[in-house]
Length: 464
Image 1: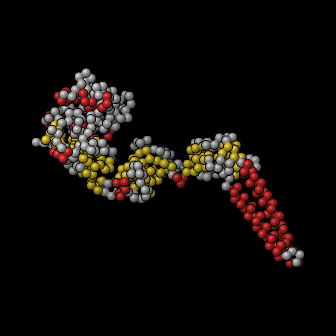
Image 2: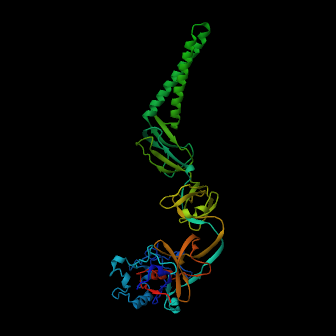
Image 3: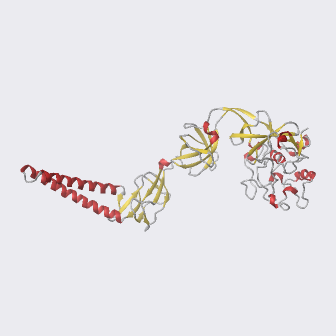
């Protein structure tokens, strides 16, 4: 009889005994057809490939950690359990030919959250089986002075050094002076546009200037005749008002035309110039094209500085504030570290990712940093103690993270853990482990499969 959920903590999942492969299948995440070596965080200390969560054996269609064709030593484990497809030399329960609906994976249906209960025990046949299976452990390490928050980051243009240039008045593009990739200085010409509206405004401006000249002459005449009584005070005031109106109309037209840039060829031509120094990254104008005032014709970026945008998880926000130093590594620039300080933390959260945006300005004098690069940022925070374990010691079942602690020579206990920051090779465990406990590294994936109800070889029995 299967025990109730309330008794799962005291259960022992008895393994008949098995052998964990000393090397995973030839293909690993990110590897090419030639089977490139797994990255460092997926290998143990002896350089062997460690089974990775959810990775399939591309050749045989089953989980690579359970593939008996690539790892023949595992075959005896499943044969002893009676879980064996002799025709295809694979475990019957995950044989993709006999059971294509399972997709080469164990059936997972343990609890409401899909993960084994905290404290579930796994017992191998004996200590010799542990050695033969290749299961290895390390002690959880307590590190003094640990602190900070690690999160993802991507690069973007510094918005204060980004310019979008649009047509000042509708017209036709007559000439282009810069293309994508051109380096321009502030004031350099970019595009010449002919606009009927501009031509009409310039004609009106000339009329307004003439009106001002005539009004000025009339006002001076009325002012000179007034002392002799030839011109009344009323006519002087009327002449003064006409002069002021003429000057106002002239100023309005001149101001309207001043935003166009420098005059171009023809009565209606005008030339748009670069508002800042930088690199042309977009050009949406072509000769002969009719453009409107709403259309962006050029984008210019000063790339001597960039912004790193950090996605800070909601749970870590109390540790993050403006002024904190940040160390940034980028996927596209391995071996390089960039540093800066947070200048802004958004007052709102993304409703989908539950993260807040933090901004770090970065100097980019050599142009290595490019928009949309991705990487990892470590934010310096208050120093504290932290329990660290190798990254490969943490397994995942649905949304629950697990670790396995050695209790005796051949018995292990499942722990639900909460993880924190990572330094690449090791990960912080905020809850679920104590410093000094022996945690399974190599072989943790196979132990996880044994804790899942309905998985390969898993059987529940009462603890002795």
